[in-house]
Image (cartoon, rainbow over all chains, first blue to last red; front, top):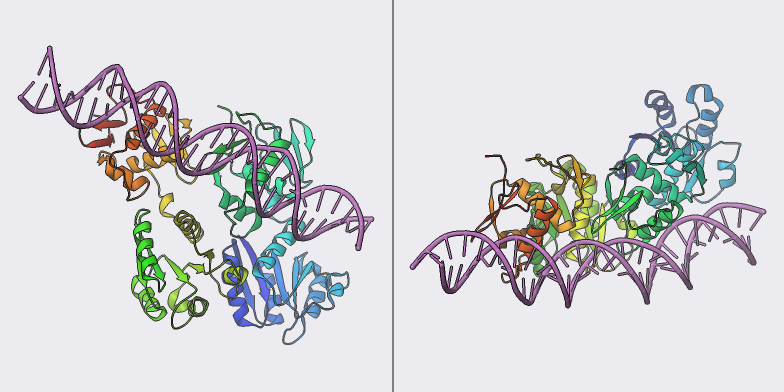
Length: 232
Length: 232
DNA sequence: CATCGATGATAAGTATTTGTTTCATCTGGT
DNA sequence: ACCAGATGAAACAAATACTTATCATCGATG
């Protein structure tokens, strides 16, 4: 489970965020003041830092700069800045500060989760970087984000790739459409949409898996889809 | 059995939902007003709260906020909001309110059940995920929805799977056709229909259980069917 | 800000499952 | 052994779910 540290003096927001992130398999911790926050970084070694700009003692810009300056202590800790308004954004993400992304307040929680996932993926520390065992002629190299089918490189879109990864991590598991939606987008699925079907269809097509007796993705009628792990 | 609390001033709907959820092994209780509802939460300690937006006294948003604010009292009670229309949905599920999901009215009962399962799965265990003891060469992995007969994977349809699950949960129990009908679909069992017979026949066929001395499903003449639990 | 690719929505077409009918067969009681 | 009701299973019909082509929309890119 990913550890997220939040430095924000708004206790209420911290509480809410902690609850919200828990739904997405992230454990959040809150530091109300920068000094406390820096301490906690050393102890917790969080996977990501959410940093408010408006803070007591010194502002978020300062904190960010400091963390980046002392990378020997804090490492390459990914940072997501919360800005009061959509201002001075260029400098935040820019070199000067070294934050990885920013989000203007007020924000949609979904947006936050999406950006967290984004950052974690970029920083190579995401779940999607786990090794994936080759199955049935498909090899995946997560570090290169490269997929090979019978030794030929496949060109997959982001969603297709994520879907394939998910399937391959749980071979023979039957996913419902909700589950797939939730795992791929981190929100509750709109059940009246055929988006998942379309996605599966596209992936199948690229995998050349269009016959009635699928080689990879089996339809479990009335339930969802299953990635076939072994030949029988 | 899961306890579900419904806060909704539509007495009729509450009644219907109570009946409907009963089929899915959930016991529903209805509170017509928020004040009453909050009381009942403390007493019942329900596993999930279904909360209508349109309510007397104060609206569902208020109630939701209150429950989240007083988490020391109400705990992490999962909340499913019923919205009048498909609007302002982001904020509902979002941080501000802390609901776990929402469902626009009018909704399909099946949809509701699906979402309840979703939420319960996220927040812990799901009734439909309970373990099933292997019997007589049949193993079931509910989390993967995988059935193995003598170590070979079986391909079952939804109904067949549900029927098998039901049988295996109560080995040696004789089910009448009505009982099976009620458990598998709804109260409105057509007693003239032979759907159950057909279903049993199909399941037997897939289990290779077609001989006169059945290995799994025994016909209790004039009564119903029994799933055989042990070798005699 | 125009373009392109990726993704979501829609709907027509297809496939599978599930329910019903039917008839051969079976059961238990006479 | 015979009968009436009950059951099994095949064939057909109806309901339901899935596939995919196509179009719309969104977001990134330059």
